[in-house]
Length: 359
Image (cartoon, rainbow, N blue to C red; front, side, top):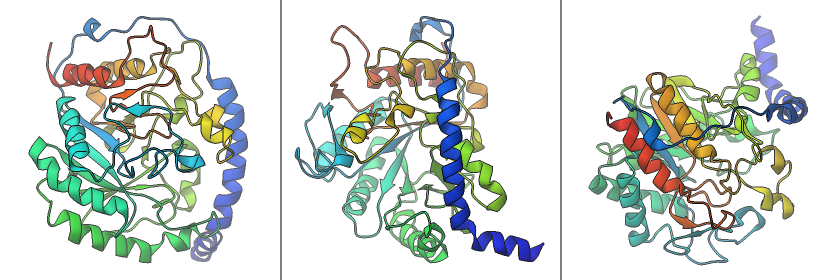
């Protein structure tokens, strides 16, 4: 038995590669059958009675923007295509006024926690995250760091690149630079500071560190967890990609509640321009409500309200991920019809208010 487990671990990277290929085939079939029609209904925030429930509202927050169109993640590559524009223009994530504009809006929306994208010690994002942590207390917010895959890797060396050495260095750095100096505003889960990691970080190796609560965030969660018998496991969805594709018609939805009572929601997902640029593929399988006419965000919030006694964390993807067009940050939208009165930020404000106050 022991030699069998050892052999599986040794072959893990190759197993992951084969599994991904197999899963991709399964996914393509399942997705083609998934977009079944449901009953058409009208959803309004005033139509439901809300009762107080202790739900934490979180939002994924990105800090990689450089301050001008054509640079710093504002259309500087095929992976950073932007067609929507923030109301304050193409800001720098390092600019104090931009950060405070965001934090004020996030607080006013009733959001409790920022899940902040972090790209390693000494990175541009590291500098921004320090500034964010120094300011969030002023707005009554808390934050937790999501460790991104900031070291180059391939499917064959994930275990080596994001193994024990990587984790030891990252966690020690985060503990020293974020947990200790900002413990009062750092978000705790189960009594410990929460560290998120975005798959493949944490996919094949997860540290046992008593200082933290660690959760792995990713996509295609249910498919990857089929490999749990060899140690692969993802805890939380980044966004509810199991609802995609959702580009026409109407359908009944069922959000998936993960560990800790966590549920992910998103106003939209649209990375089709990356496919056109040749840097991604199969974008049609991921597209969700690209012009808001399906009102998918409202549908998800309605589900949360109906199932609020089962939910403990609602994570919104995202505050400002403009490349995948999931942002709720106030912006000028490129594809929303002019006649459509539909604003993700306003919708967030109203539904969070409904969750947090009895009516």
